[in-house]
Image 1 (cartoon, one colour):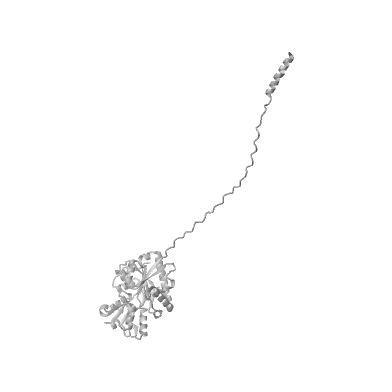
Image 2: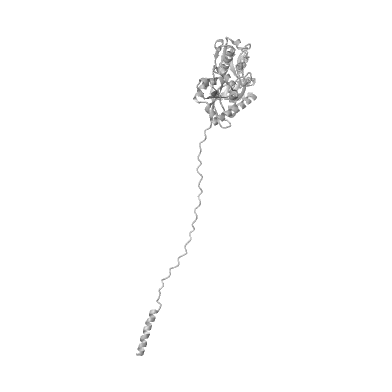
Length: 369
């Protein structure tokens, strides 16, 4: 009984111990270690340099052009301008281009000014004052006086005064030209009526030269160099010797503002809108300076200057004039220049012009700088 009890007890103990034993753990197979990641070399993008923009051609600036009208011939006031054109090639130091507008007839002046085809002009004082007064160009302005002497009466020896020519044939250029108006004033002041006391015929200078050489007139009114040309041709061809008559055309109005024996006969004129334009007005003042230099060159180098003058006349005016008579005229001393602003000559200049044209001129005609 006792043994049976012990066996039973041992069996129970065995069961208890079995129940308390640690359970068997089945471990899942280990996953393989992850392979070392492959390193891929990634290069940084190349920096991009912005390309320069394609150059664009900017339109060239239009050149500034100043259109200047002048007598298409060897008028004394035009000759320094022709020298200036030859020396500069028509380009001023500022770069402004001078466009030479040739004038063949005095009647063209008013038309060119009225139409705005010129910006400035070299012209006879009396003629341009008449254009201002009667031609409707109320924006015309006289800027400078350029020439003080250059018109003469050519006649056979023995002619000393207008009295010696009373009732005789006198040849003159256009009645509105400077020489003609100066002569008519001189006749009137000497007590003569130009239309009654003389036989006056108006012709181009070239025809006047030929008629005087052939003895078909008693006297003629010339500007240089035509006075020199006429006397030289008469001597060469054996005609009646011709001289400068001692008729003083420059005593028609004497004033303190200028020297005795001279008169303001030619000038530089422009339009008010040109004076109001800073670029064009500066160009005009450049022309003043270059004109003075051209006069000095012309008087110091008459032979070279005359070659330049005939070259310009041939280019712009289709002229075949020779250089020698122009050189002789320059050397004669019968042309007197002096660029003088008009404000330095007032009020004498105003009184002189009114005496010549027999009409009043208002102050607006005189340029104000």
